[in-house]
Amino acid sequence: MNRTRTLIATLLGLALILGLAGCGNSQRRIYSPERFGENGRCYYVNDISEVRLLQDDRRCERTWTAYPMPLDWRQRYDDYYGSPDYYSKYVPTDRRSTYVRGEEEFRKVNGPGIARQRASATYTDGKRKYSGPDVAKSRSATSSGSGGLGGGSRSGGLGGGSRSSSGSRTSGRTSAGR
Image 1 (cartoon, rainbow, N blue to C red):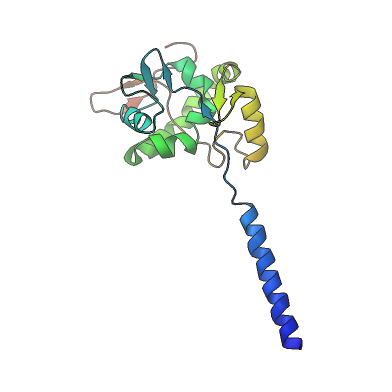
Image 2: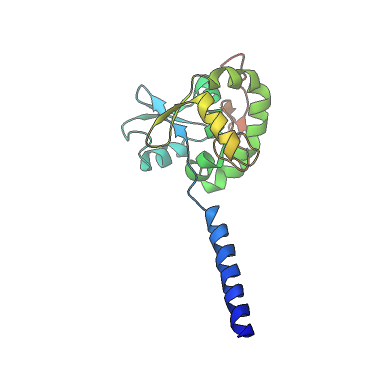
C-alpha cells in the first residue's frame, strides 16, 4: 500500500513537472515588417543573396529587383532586421557571423535615427497590423531583456556601406548621410 502511494505521488509529480515545462513551449509571435521592399524593389541588408531567400518565402515578388536597403528603412525596422527572426532565416548561414558582428556598430552610429524612425514602422504578425511603438513595447515585455522583436540575442546587420574589391563590407553610412 505504501509503495503504491509512493509510485502514485512520483507519477503525479513527474506529470506536473512535464506539464509545467510544456507551458513555456508555446509558439512565440513573430512581428515582421508588413513589406520587405517597395516600388518593385526587394530590399536586402548586407548581401544580395538575402533577396532569393525573401522571394522563396514570398516576402518579395520574384519580379522585384534586388536593391540595397535604404538607411531610413533599415533604421525604421531595426528591431526586426537586428533579430534572429530575420538573420537566421534570410541571411545565408556562411554570412551570418559577419552580419551579426555589424549590428552593434550600426546601432551605435545610428541610434538617434533608429529612435526617430521606429515610430513610423508598421509590423504584422500575419493576422493584424501593429505600429512600431506598440510592437516594441509588447516584445520588450515578453522577451528576455533584449527589447527587440526577435527575443533572445540582439545582434543583426549593417544597414549600409559599400563593398571593397575583395567583397568585404565597409560601414560607410551614418544617420547623417546616405
